[in-house]
Amino acid sequence: MRLQLLSIASLVVSVGASWTKNINYRSPSEHHPSLGISIHRVVKRNDPQSSWDQATLNFTHGVASGDPYPDSVILWTRVGPTSDNDRSNVTVSGYVQLFDHDNQKFVSMSKAPVCVEYKIATQKDLSDVVDSGKVFTSSDVDYTVKVEAKNLKPYTTYYYQFNVCDSDNKSPLGRTKTTPHADDDVTKVGIAVYSCSNYPFGFFNAYGNSVRKDSVDYVVHLGDYIYEYANGEYGWGQSIGRVPLPDKEIFSLYDYRKRLATYRTDLDLVASHQQFPWIPVWDDHEVADNVYRDGTSKMNNTESSFIKDGEVSFDQRKMNAVRAYFEWMPIRQVEMDDNLRIWRSFSIGKLLDLVMLDTRNYDRSITDLYWNTDYVHAISNDAGRSLMGQRQEHWFYNTLSESADRGAAWRIIGSQIIFSRVNQSAAFGDDNPLNYDAWDGYMSNKNRTLNHLYSNNIGNNIFLAGDSHASWVSDLAWLGEKEYNKETGEGSIGVEFAGSAVTSPCPYGANISLATANNYSGILQASNDELQWQDLYYRGYYELHISGEEVVANYFGMPTVVTRNSWEIPLANFTVKNGENRLQRPVAGGIVESGSLKAGRTVQTNATHDTLNGTWFVSHAPLEVL
Image (cartoon, rainbow, N blue to C red):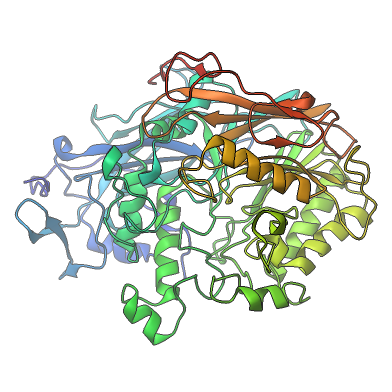
């Protein structure tokens, strides 16, 4: 049968392995009743003198690294007796019951731990190990391993690997990179920015292209790493062999673990995690659509909502999602006493401060839930509404000020949702023309942010956004309060780069034609003074190449995502010069490949979209397997 049972033989694991150094036993919370794991109970229940037969253990989902610091980085893997995920709530008398899919029944398994060793070195052959250790994992954390590798040097490339203790059963070799010290002089840093990868809509080719080019140092993910929907509700994956598991809308801890595991079978996503350190944050679909502090578009804490939808309360569903996310992502828990805190910052030399916000889950006031759009429109200017909650909002403003005071050249702000105004009334004649699930639905919070930047003369701000499944590039202007010239960009306090989705469809239709998409883009661009370029058609990503003199943003589109391929189209390039706080004119050099450019041209190469005959896209070399 597919399920591997425990070997009762006395396969004694190496001494010196630690429970607590596997961060997933302490993260995301040691104390929250739905998130915390009592380590002393785990240790008591497990028998370290018994072990799995090493032949039954597999590194099921590759390796990953993330949240780099100058002297440490988070390393991740999963090693277990089965590729299926743990059903942690099914226990009997100290034994865990796992489901044998072949024989359609539950079987008992003694909760023996798995001992895992890790090592990290500057040489690819791991001949000069600078840090190593042994940790336990078990079904309690879905057999995941997350450790902090320490004693590292700043802005240095490292290679790392895991193995089952006292064996040659090894994981793939991973590569990672630390950040510089905050006071280090750094010439240039490259960051790939992604969001919105929906499994049944296509292959995650965009993740692999930065690996194929080896073009960046770090990956920033702005959320919607997974989607909670049932197959067929939003995306139909049968035709391309991309049915997300479990094949239903997800609610339980097992469901979220299984959905994350399914996404992590995409080879380009695996390669990106293996090659680059990630700095991720969640958006809404890591929990559920349009999530906020107290509910989602479908769910709240009323009895009728949770009996109808998954037989679980919203609070419990949210805790399930959060716990699974922290188990599976190479991310630090910033404060152990704040179980939902994911907002944090990274100082990357004197060059930049990267500020990652949580504008969804932490303490967000009610949002547009589709049935209440008129109500949210009416209260969108209410001073008491906040995207972030008071604690995070104060931290955000203080972090911006501290960054300016320390002399960092740039402030890069990772915000899941679009900050700039997007008025869609000319395109759709809508009585509620703004997206009230974005910053426009929280105008007082938005105005407080702009006021802090303008009043304190904090410039060189680069806002990043995902969520919308489209590309938007805007000057960062305080319309109605500060003078702004759309031709020159004078009056702006920075720039916003919002990116398209890895695979999630265009918001105006998954099968929209290029001509129709560009027509809508033209209407949107003309309706918003600060919006300098807009593209609806292409799935893709963008890269930031940051130096002391300028930030260059390169946008790439995927010709198709219904097959796995390495093709991409350079769509547009943008430059922001240090101290100018606006897009350099002519914007994008006056020419883009797709979409609509204010005071510029869209020039498309004469080639078809679905053949290799055109010269308008680049096919990159195969992925290197480390």
